[in-house]
Each structure stands twice: as C-alpha cells, then as structure tokens.
Image 1: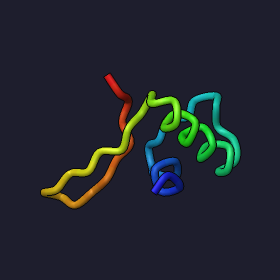
Image 2: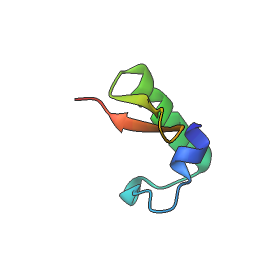
Image 3: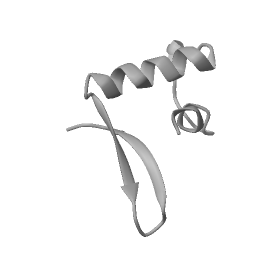
Length: 53
C-alpha cells in the first residue's frame, strides 16, 4: 500500500524526491511516529494515508 501511495500521479515530494525505498521509509517513519495514519473509505473500498490532526 505504501509503495502505491508514494508512486501515485500527482504526489508532491518537492525536493525530497529520491528512490522508491527512501520514500517508503519516510512514510513508514511517519506512521511509526503517528504523524500520519491509514484511513479506509468503505463506500469506495479505497485506502489512503493522511496527516493526523
């Protein structure tokens, strides 16, 4: 799921670009530190990663 998320069209990585493995590691770290979370939309049966508020 994380690989699909970081390779989506329109994903804005700015200057942080880099290798797929680096992007996946960044998202994993954000999940571990609870900066982002996974949400699942029942109606569309899709998952996404969003910033926690």
